[in-house]
Length: 202
Image (cartoon, rainbow, N blue to C red):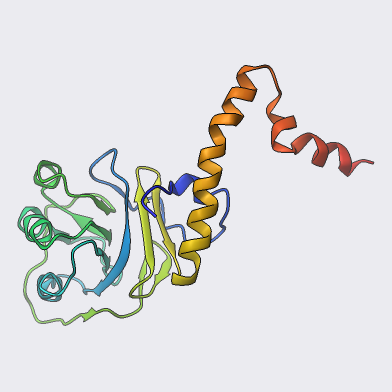
Protein backbone atom coordinates (compact mmCIF):
# COMPACT_ATOMS: atom_id res chain seq x y z
CA UNK A 1 0.00 0.00 0.00
CA UNK A 2 2.87 2.39 0.75
CA UNK A 3 3.90 2.29 -2.92
CA UNK A 4 0.59 3.88 -3.87
CA UNK A 5 0.71 7.62 -4.55
CA UNK A 6 -2.29 9.71 -3.56
CA UNK A 7 -2.22 11.56 -6.89
CA UNK A 8 -2.56 8.23 -8.70
CA UNK A 9 -5.62 7.47 -6.59
CA UNK A 10 -6.94 10.79 -7.87
CA UNK A 11 -7.09 9.24 -11.34
CA UNK A 12 -9.24 6.38 -10.02
CA UNK A 13 -11.44 7.59 -7.16
CA UNK A 14 -13.89 10.44 -6.61
CA UNK A 15 -14.25 10.08 -2.84
CA UNK A 16 -12.04 9.62 0.19
CA UNK A 17 -9.80 12.66 -0.31
CA UNK A 18 -9.28 14.81 2.77
CA UNK A 19 -9.46 18.59 2.57
CA UNK A 20 -6.13 19.79 1.09
CA UNK A 21 -5.77 22.11 4.09
CA UNK A 22 -4.80 18.97 6.04
CA UNK A 23 -1.20 19.16 4.83
CA UNK A 24 2.15 17.54 5.56
CA UNK A 25 4.41 19.02 8.23
CA UNK A 26 7.43 16.98 7.10
CA UNK A 27 8.01 17.13 3.35
CA UNK A 28 8.79 14.13 1.20
CA UNK A 29 7.02 11.55 3.38
CA UNK A 30 4.61 8.85 2.24
CA UNK A 31 2.87 6.59 4.75
CA UNK A 32 0.26 3.89 4.54
CA UNK A 33 -1.41 1.96 7.30
CA UNK A 34 -4.48 1.28 9.38
CA UNK A 35 -6.51 4.07 10.94
CA UNK A 36 -6.56 4.22 14.73
CA UNK A 37 -9.24 6.83 15.33
CA UNK A 38 -9.50 9.34 18.15
CA UNK A 39 -12.01 12.15 18.74
CA UNK A 40 -11.01 14.92 21.16
CA UNK A 41 -13.05 18.05 21.81
CA UNK A 42 -11.85 21.62 22.12
CA UNK A 43 -9.11 22.25 24.63
CA UNK A 44 -8.89 18.70 26.04
CA UNK A 45 -6.30 16.13 24.90
CA UNK A 46 -6.38 13.62 27.76
CA UNK A 47 -7.99 11.03 25.50
CA UNK A 48 -5.22 11.44 22.91
CA UNK A 49 -2.53 10.83 25.54
CA UNK A 50 -4.38 7.70 26.67
CA UNK A 51 -4.75 6.50 23.08
CA UNK A 52 -0.97 6.54 22.69
CA UNK A 53 -0.86 3.64 25.17
CA UNK A 54 -3.17 1.58 22.94
CA UNK A 55 -1.80 2.06 19.42
CA UNK A 56 0.06 -0.71 17.61
CA UNK A 57 3.28 -0.25 15.66
CA UNK A 58 2.41 0.82 12.12
CA UNK A 59 -0.96 2.34 13.02
CA UNK A 60 -1.83 5.82 11.77
CA UNK A 61 -3.51 8.05 14.34
CA UNK A 62 -6.49 9.78 12.75
CA UNK A 63 -7.61 12.59 15.04
CA UNK A 64 -11.01 14.28 14.80
CA UNK A 65 -10.86 17.64 16.60
CA UNK A 66 -14.65 17.96 16.73
CA UNK A 67 -14.54 21.29 14.91
CA UNK A 68 -11.83 22.95 16.99
CA UNK A 69 -9.47 25.00 14.80
CA UNK A 70 -7.75 26.90 17.60
CA UNK A 71 -5.93 24.54 19.95
CA UNK A 72 -2.90 22.47 18.95
CA UNK A 73 -3.35 18.92 20.25
CA UNK A 74 0.02 17.70 18.98
CA UNK A 75 3.50 18.95 19.84
CA UNK A 76 7.02 17.84 20.62
CA UNK A 77 6.25 15.61 23.62
CA UNK A 78 3.39 13.83 21.87
CA UNK A 79 5.62 13.40 18.83
CA UNK A 80 8.26 11.59 20.85
CA UNK A 81 5.65 9.42 22.59
CA UNK A 82 4.16 8.53 19.20
CA UNK A 83 7.57 7.78 17.75
CA UNK A 84 8.41 5.47 20.67
CA UNK A 85 5.04 3.73 20.23
CA UNK A 86 6.03 2.94 16.65
CA UNK A 87 3.12 4.57 14.83
CA UNK A 88 3.54 5.32 11.14
CA UNK A 89 2.20 8.87 11.45
CA UNK A 90 -0.75 11.06 12.34
CA UNK A 91 -3.51 12.84 10.45
CA UNK A 92 -5.09 15.65 12.47
CA UNK A 93 -8.20 17.59 11.49
CA UNK A 94 -6.87 20.51 13.46
CA UNK A 95 -3.65 22.21 14.45
CA UNK A 96 -0.28 21.18 15.87
CA UNK A 97 2.65 23.01 17.41
CA UNK A 98 6.43 22.52 17.74
CA UNK A 99 6.91 21.94 14.02
CA UNK A 100 10.69 22.02 14.43
CA UNK A 101 10.49 19.14 16.91
CA UNK A 102 8.10 17.19 14.69
CA UNK A 103 10.56 17.56 11.82
CA UNK A 104 13.50 16.82 14.10
CA UNK A 105 11.93 13.49 15.06
CA UNK A 106 11.14 12.88 11.37
CA UNK A 107 7.56 12.09 12.37
CA UNK A 108 5.04 12.15 9.48
CA UNK A 109 2.20 14.43 10.56
CA UNK A 110 -0.57 16.02 8.50
CA UNK A 111 -2.60 18.85 10.05
CA UNK A 112 -4.29 22.20 9.39
CA UNK A 113 -1.29 24.31 10.37
CA UNK A 114 0.28 25.54 13.55
CA UNK A 115 -0.97 27.18 16.72
CA UNK A 116 0.75 28.26 19.92
CA UNK A 117 -2.47 27.76 21.92
CA UNK A 118 -2.35 24.16 23.09
CA UNK A 119 -4.78 21.66 24.56
CA UNK A 120 -4.92 20.96 28.30
CA UNK A 121 -6.50 18.38 30.59
CA UNK A 122 -9.94 19.75 31.39
CA UNK A 123 -12.13 16.64 31.46
CA UNK A 124 -14.21 17.27 28.35
CA UNK A 125 -14.02 13.63 27.32
CA UNK A 126 -13.37 12.09 23.94
CA UNK A 127 -13.56 8.71 22.20
CA UNK A 128 -11.18 6.06 20.91
CA UNK A 129 -11.68 3.73 17.94
CA UNK A 130 -15.02 5.19 16.91
CA UNK A 131 -16.23 6.55 13.56
CA UNK A 132 -14.73 10.01 13.02
CA UNK A 133 -14.63 12.75 10.40
CA UNK A 134 -11.28 14.10 9.24
CA UNK A 135 -10.87 16.61 6.44
CA UNK A 136 -14.48 16.09 5.41
CA UNK A 137 -14.09 12.32 5.08
CA UNK A 138 -15.74 9.70 7.29
CA UNK A 139 -13.16 7.34 8.77
CA UNK A 140 -13.84 4.04 10.48
CA UNK A 141 -11.34 2.28 12.74
CA UNK A 142 -9.30 -0.05 10.55
CA UNK A 143 -9.78 1.91 7.32
CA UNK A 144 -6.72 2.29 5.11
CA UNK A 145 -4.86 5.61 5.18
CA UNK A 146 -2.44 6.75 2.48
CA UNK A 147 -0.76 10.13 2.90
CA UNK A 148 2.02 11.90 1.05
CA UNK A 149 3.04 15.40 0.03
CA UNK A 150 -0.05 15.66 -2.20
CA UNK A 151 -2.58 14.91 0.54
CA UNK A 152 -4.43 12.25 2.49
CA UNK A 153 -6.74 9.54 1.13
CA UNK A 154 -8.96 7.19 3.14
CA UNK A 155 -9.79 3.75 1.72
CA UNK A 156 -12.43 1.39 3.05
CA UNK A 157 -11.07 -2.05 3.93
CA UNK A 158 -12.56 -3.73 0.89
CA UNK A 159 -11.03 -1.10 -1.41
CA UNK A 160 -7.44 -1.43 -0.24
CA UNK A 161 -6.31 -4.47 -2.27
CA UNK A 162 -7.98 -3.81 -5.62
CA UNK A 163 -7.53 -0.03 -5.64
CA UNK A 164 -3.88 -0.10 -4.61
CA UNK A 165 -3.09 -2.83 -7.15
CA UNK A 166 -4.69 -0.76 -9.89
CA UNK A 167 -2.84 2.40 -8.80
CA UNK A 168 0.55 0.66 -8.72
CA UNK A 169 -0.05 -0.74 -12.21
CA UNK A 170 -0.81 2.78 -13.43
CA UNK A 171 2.36 4.10 -11.84
CA UNK A 172 4.44 1.38 -13.47
CA UNK A 173 2.87 2.16 -16.85
CA UNK A 174 3.76 5.85 -16.53
CA UNK A 175 7.37 5.22 -17.59
CA UNK A 176 6.23 3.87 -20.94
CA UNK A 177 3.91 6.86 -21.42
CA UNK A 178 6.81 9.24 -20.83
CA UNK A 179 8.94 7.32 -23.34
CA UNK A 180 6.19 7.52 -25.95
CA UNK A 181 5.90 11.29 -25.39
CA UNK A 182 9.65 11.69 -25.84
CA UNK A 183 9.43 9.68 -29.05
CA UNK A 184 6.96 12.18 -30.52
CA UNK A 185 3.53 10.73 -29.79
CA UNK A 186 0.82 13.13 -28.70
CA UNK A 187 -0.57 12.80 -25.17
CA UNK A 188 -4.13 12.91 -26.47
CA UNK A 189 -3.44 9.88 -28.67
CA UNK A 190 -1.80 7.92 -25.87
CA UNK A 191 -4.50 8.68 -23.31
CA UNK A 192 -7.42 8.02 -25.64
CA UNK A 193 -8.61 11.64 -25.53
CA UNK A 194 -8.41 11.92 -29.33
CA UNK A 195 -10.82 9.08 -29.90
CA UNK A 196 -13.15 10.33 -27.18
CA UNK A 197 -13.28 13.96 -28.30
CA UNK A 198 -13.46 13.26 -32.03
CA UNK A 199 -16.02 10.55 -31.43
CA UNK A 200 -18.37 13.04 -29.75
CA UNK A 201 -19.11 14.77 -33.03
CA UNK A 202 -19.35 11.67 -35.17
